[in-house]
Length: 170
Length: 170
Image (tube, rainbow over all chains, first blue to last red; front, side, top):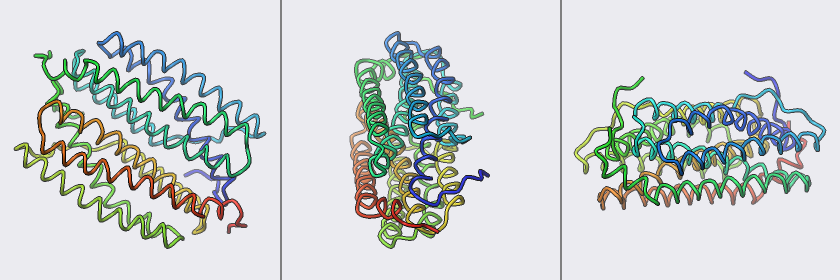
């Protein structure tokens, strides 16, 4: 049980930023595992690129905390823990083939959607609280997450899903 | 560790449906807690309406499994567990006031986004596998989840966020 109370929108906003900060840092550890498990070079590269972007997004949150004169609270993002665990289970249940790649894409898109929801809410709260610069930084990340999700769609529809259907995988 | 292996798109599709089925059933238990914790009547009603919709979505998945001649695998959706746990933490950290309502909306939108990602992927796999009727059913749920997310946005922007900012909550 955490002790920081949420009494107003300022408290909630800090909680949200702490949650996103922890989520990004969990992802920085998890993405290399997903890249390693992927068969498709295209998918592997997309995940590796997103890893660099994720590191940058974590730095952007550092900048945001500085801008607000705050430090990240000690929050564990349980949702991201569950999302990552689920992704790892998918990898454990499969071999290196297009079916696993399709599963990795599904897991990664769930992660992107979590972040789209999280950054979307935080951006709207930043706006209401009058944190203009912070709002801009959150909007940048939000756009990147949406783009990453679209890229995963393209890769899935490009050929991986079809290969997963047709392969005598294994 | 689960024993069902993912060797092709059919296996992955069944895994996804089982994950969504478990997620909906977790939500059916969690939504009344969220409705109960909300202060705003509008938010409470929206969550209660979504509970009815969620029960219907679980029934739709029953229909899908029947249509496919399959039974739901025994899958625990760890991501939904994490999402719900995070939502409960938010409630535990707050009192019944607009700041809590804003937190509940944030949690509920994360849940909706998880489902949007999950149903989006499953629908695209159903299409590729030629399960036309199943694809239609998944598309119905997907539209409902998107609409539920939009409704939560409207409620947040209608007045809850502003009240959470301005209230001397507590």
